[in-house]
Length: 257
Image 1 (cartoon, rainbow, N blue to C red):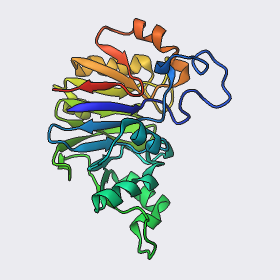
Image 2 (tube, one colour):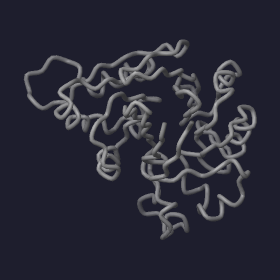
Image 3 (cartoon, rainbow, N blue to C red):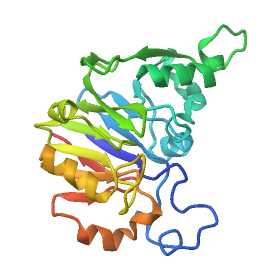
């Protein structure tokens, strides 16, 4: 499968509005981070999206995406679901509802905030979707034809889901993963994990904590996402990381065997 990092930034993105720090003023494209999201292209030609934030429309146009088969939601914070209204073009082109997967907490929030998608309406052109609730304990077969194993984690006290698809695992907006869930990650080739900044944070992994999780899982390669401007310049940070760990950036494309 091929993975495209559509966005690799925090809820504010990078650059941050009105910030004059070196990272936000950087001319290096590696230091520009839209809100976090990833696109997985399977060997069967299916497209699976992880999270659909407020930059979704821009990301789809930038990558020339013409079809979308399933959406995996990690949690329902606005920087991860704020683009849901823009599934409408895919509804129109594909002539079908979008298949969306999430945990109970995210389902409740999405149905509340986007009630017009799931309730009865007489207005043509509104988004259409089927929302599937995942327990997080069992693998699920997506409409896209791929089996995915949810990985349960905590974002402070909010239950969130990471996802494992084959030898790829993707976790964002977490600051705690139980040992049982770590076991689900063993054997992955590629691990994508959030790493907000160098200093400890109350609801996200910081760099030392992300590296600790990577050490437990032992992937061949790992990528850090959901990074803030506090992480520092890409060119400097990348040099400091272990050889098999990299700072992800928008537009990065990788292949997972």
